[in-house]
Image (tube, rainbow, N blue to C red; front, side):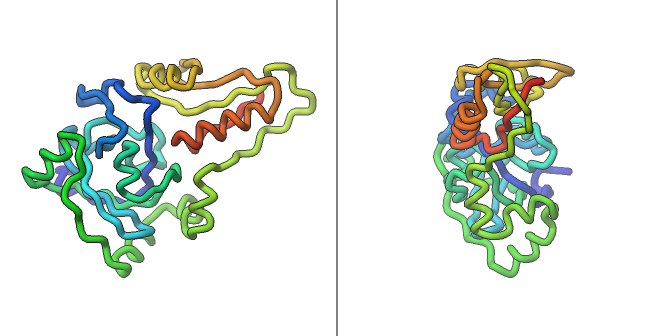
Length: 234
């Protein structure tokens, strides 16, 4: 499918200063405040129009990286793109992703890490029709403003352990197919990379108690990694 014919709904996540300076799939260094995005299939160097399905706000982004690693995410945004879209720190938001041919002026602005020209917001009737197409399980998590606010710092339950040993708790921040990206993120978090079967997991710890692990997990969520989870070692 050509870039200009791509039109899908799904969920956007974002990543921030943890990968600053790391090489993107396009070869350019990652700039957190630029208006860029990672997508699995849209051509590198192409442009996509993103519409937030809760507010209708619409922006233009430059596709310069590959991702997301999670199958239930449609696109990964830079911190600048997430802020421009109005995500307000929440780790995930429902979006429409539409491949477009950018004007020369918009393309030049995005290439210089500046926003493209403002775009019209989507009307409520269109947003309602697009939201129906969202995956049901995640749509329930983001359907209401109250749930969207709660999603900003989700607190997954710690697996039960009768008498955890000292240092039994770990926090998994994210997992990548790219070892370079995993190591760049681990360096930002002062964590480590555990690799297995082509997947590279960024983990923190060990922590001696659940409270310390929870604080580390919440800090990871605050920095844009809301899917971070606590692991109790056997």
